[in-house]
Image (cartoon, rainbow, N blue to C red; front, side, top):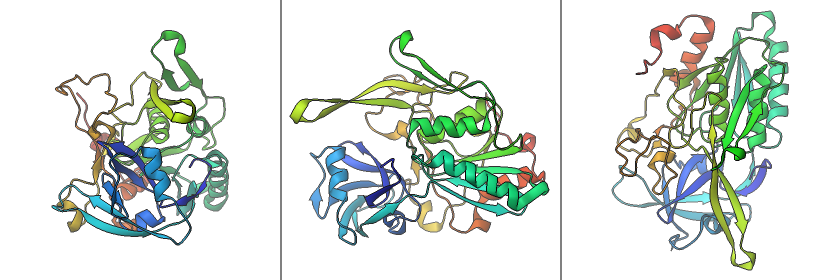
Amino acid sequence: QTRGEFGGLGIEVTMENGVVKVVSAIEDTPASKAGLLSGDLITALDKKPIQGLTLEEAVEKMRGPVNAPITLTIERKGVDNPFDVAVTRDVIHIKPVKYSAEDDVGYVHITSFSEQTTADLEKAVDDLKKKIGPKLKGYIIDLRNNPGGLLDQAISVSDAFLDQGAIVLTKGRNIEETQRSNARPGDIAEGKKIVVLINGGSASASEIVAGALQDHHRATIVGTRSFGKGSVQTIIPLGSNGALRLTTARYYTPSGRSIQAKGIEPEVVVEEELPDELKKTAANSVGEVNLRGHLKGEDESEDNSTQEEGGSSSYVPPEEDKDTQLQYALDLLRGTKSVASDVKKKG
């Protein structure tokens, strides 16, 4: 799933209480076109309950021949009864980087962290420099609903905008298991201002990038709190009997903040206006901290009395002019908005 092309539905999923939970529906895939939302629970495939399957087995059943239909039974918060959604399988061509020139601002949408993400990012920035020319004010890096992907790509994307310093710390149980990834000289944006957009569907590798650029004050983070998937998983084969998936380490931002179950808090919280059909549901609020049996963050107690509020909206309006987060970022780079007047006060 990290190579950039696979057959299936186009969703990033996890397992919760024996059923499959949608983290993010990838843009322009059968899942997103069918209306699947972050937080939806998939309880049955073609009327056969998922209960008893591993996550890998459930994912394998969702894959199949191109154009072959599958019926997903969905439970959605705020909706009284389960309902069926018919989805037609397709080959999922993941284009990890999409970009456009928004007059004097370069807009770069990173949809996933696959093998070609950094190379495509560098091409996008180079092309935007040529298209926009000397009037270029800065860049918007859109990580909304990006479920993550390859760690090395998260590191190299961060490195592309940083001249020096730590990018991410990976800490295991013992001090000798701590690994630190550092930036090398060179900034493809040449010091231009950067705004990073995140929301409740931004997870894992997306949070590493947002956290690194935030800690180094290289970008202003705008949107809502990210998913909070900051754990490292190792799969240990058990011969022919399967495999054991162990959480062996956690990701930390350069300043030492744990991402796990907390996510990245934006400097400027900007929430999208939900359409009427979503206002009644809580399915658009999703986060690692909301997953039953999740790896606890460092500030969470066993009774969750110190648990932060989990998740945030993952809704992004399809119309650019109605995209409040995007419009705010454009205004910020053009100087018609001030961070100081809108920044979320902490503490």
